[in-house]
Image 1 (cartoon, rainbow, N blue to C red):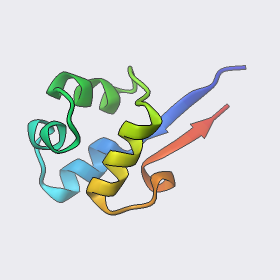
Image 2 (cartoon, rainbow, N blue to C red):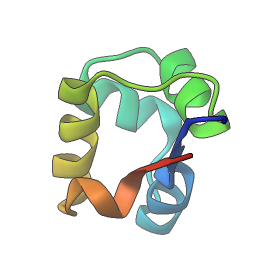
Image 3 (tube, helix red, strand yellow):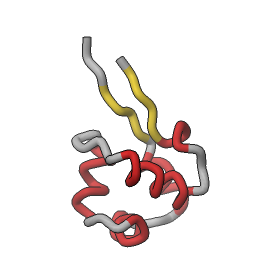
Length: 68
């Protein structure tokens, strides 16, 4: 059974009119990390996921979810 983290970072970021660089700077990571998260190639730590949710002022579950 496959497990994965689904995220909507790209959707929230584009709706907010924020660049990958701006989001990366705001949450303390590189632009490459934001790209990897958006592509689903990297599951962020709990701390980073919480920072991203706080940045968009949304509950964590609106941005990240777990699927089997």
